[in-house]
Amino acid sequence: MQSHLAQIHTMHIPDGFINAPTSAVAGVIAVVGLAFCLNGARRQLDEKTAPLAGLVAVFIFAMQMLNFPVAAGTSGHLLGGALAVILIGPYAGALAVSVVILVQALLFADGGLSAIGLNIINMGLVTAVVGWFVFRWLVKIIGVSRPKVMTAAFAAGLVSVPMSAVAFALEYAIGGTGTIPINTVTVVMVGVHILIGLGEGLITALTVGAVFLVRPDLVYGVHDRLPKKLLVTTPSVSTPANGS
Amino acid sequence: MPKRSTWVFVGVGLVLSLFLAGFVSYYASSSPDGLEKVAGDQGFLANAQDSANANLPTAGYGIEGVESARLSGGLAGVLGVLVIAIIGFGMFWLIGRSNKSKAAKQDAGQVSA
Image (cartoon, rainbow over all chains, first blue to last red; front, top):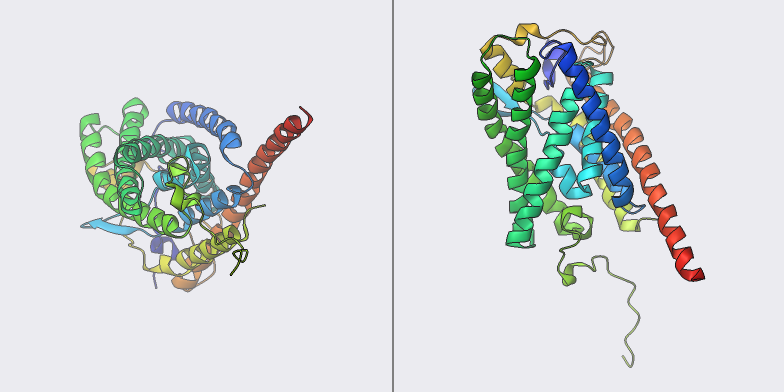
């Protein structure tokens, strides 16, 4: 019988990869970033979108448990930052992923306690910024329809993951405890995370596509660009037409 | 209040998340993930230290004492979904509520103006 520890296999940055001073600075940056997001989310979220934001956090946690194979002996899992910002906006999106990372570290010992700041920066903040700008830039250029929104979502997910790996490489360059040349770490981290990014892009596109199909008004990333015909999504109680 | 269909949407999403974390997660790849693979190949995986809370009964997405890997991982997944649901819905409800009170004030201001 396999140990339960071996069954579900996700690993964020553990304690010991990045030295304590760098991890501490990352913790401060993460707190400032989250405070900024909290303030921003206050402007973007309302009573209608708040339950969706809660659902996004839950869904990302569930999806992060589903490691998919990307190459021989290597797996990847959704980071979720791009998905979150497309569905609930950049500020709430970064907060949703950060809640997931906090619970994973505190409740499941996934990711080191001293590395929480690093993990929040890489998986919550960097993916949110990159995912948001890639998605918004693309829908501005190609427009809004279901296939186009899915295309932009795929690109946002795809690009966000290697950028997260770049963030790790930077942190490793500043405070890594190993002796591996930074160029090597960057190249191999980005390489494998481009493969994981393909999975991230696919999951992001399929999820955003499904939400856009049933409730396009709940996709925050296109809330100001929705074609008029899509704005009325729930059949209103129809009053009998005059004379019929 | 959100439209009724928003709650239906959220309910369906919650059930789906419970299914994914509680059942499908058993079939997830157990190969090392990108970071772990790189750390192993490049020889710095050994620098990883156990988290200070690595002895929690829920560490590593399992429930200590539950023999069946399927049940242990599944229960941990369900637990995680519930904990994140409580924190996430609570936090975002508080944030969204503050926005409504602002909007209500603006409305009131417009009415009295």
